[in-house]
Amino acid sequence: MPSTTRYSAEPGGMLPPIVTICGSTRFRQHIAEAALQETIAGRMVLAPAVDMRQHHTLWADPAAAEQLKARLDALHLAKISTADEVLVVTDDQLYLGESTRREALYAESLEIPISYWVAGRGRIGESHLQQPAVARERACEQWRAAFARLTEASPKGPAREDLLALAAADLAVAEHGASASLVDVRRAARQHLGIDVPHDRAQAALTVRTEDSPGAGVQFLLGSAGR
Image (tube, rainbow, N blue to C red):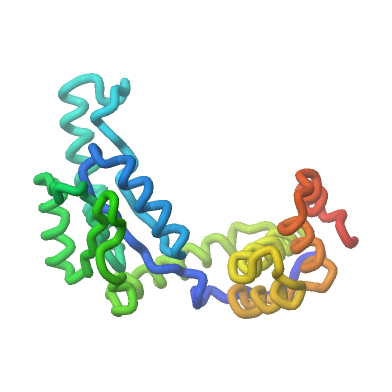
């Protein structure tokens, strides 16, 4: 039977603050640690994803490497433009290369707050993410547009209901840990997804997300649990 549930595109608490990391790729281990810590703190992290210091066939040719470097530089500026905060990663000597200095100036021109992460010390000072940013409203609009496309393309019926129940369980577990209850799952579904998850679907989703049972997830997604 097709689902008649109506879904809300309001991001609410589902859209976390965005942190864009800047820093020399020579500090890739420090960047990875900063990204890990920021993600655990509940922030959505954008960071350099390509280290051209490492050999790869995609940039083995010098001319191709030069073109790729220009594209990557532009791409990272785009990541900065979507950020609520820029986190500059450096070493204990506080080294900032030319690209990093340029990126910091670009962030300042957009009035995006800048913080620093120093190897061996971590984040310096408090996050500025309590401050409103134009980028956040822009990200909300992008979320609504993406949600509208997803809603139009998504299949109807139990499969979609199951997936949304799993999403609600993920949200509940993220907030309450393994002690998340059925009430927490149904509350998360209403608050964040704008839907009412049936009792049996919520129970099945919670079981999948809190019990170490590899086969349970497959069975659930096929719609057989609790049906």
